[in-house]
Structure formats: C-alpha cells, structure tokens
Image 1 (cartoon, one colour):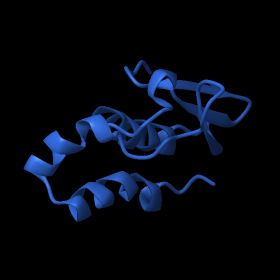
Image 2: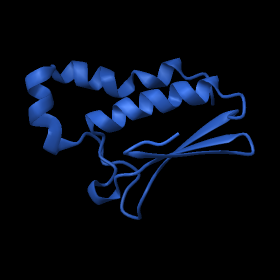
Image 3: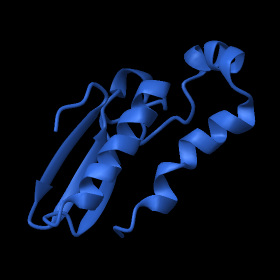
Length: 97
C-alpha cells in the first residue's frame, strides 16, 4: 500500500500506520483523513494484521490536530461538525484493537 501522507507496514501480526507529515506536526488534512479511512479498511480486511498501531512521524508531535491552513477551504465546503465527524468516522468501523 502506498499513500501520500501515510506510511504503512504489516509485520508479525502488527499493522503500523504512521502519519507522515512531520513538517506540519502531522496535522490532519482532508487528504490524510481520506487515506487513513482507506488504510484502516484495508488493514481490517488483511488477516495478517491482527492489531493496528497508529504513530506520528518526526520528533515534535504525534499529531497537532486539524490542519488549520486547510480549515478555511474546508469551512466553505462543510460545517465544522461535518469536519469533526469526518475525522472520527474511520475509528468505530475498525474492529482491530
């Protein structure tokens, strides 16, 4: 699996997903959230991944939260509550611990 904003590895039953935007402290952009949803679905279907670990690249932060530079554009397209729901949507569907 190859993604623009994520690094993904499956080894020894562990699926490791790394948020890979260290220059912006792994801020959650629309692209990252879309990729995260796709990778969680893929790992859910992969019997080799019995557990999923989420990490952040870089030394400064795991994740800074929302990508504020993209917030203005997102606010034109969706309400803040819709953006918040999009951020959390992938998690309840993932059955992996």
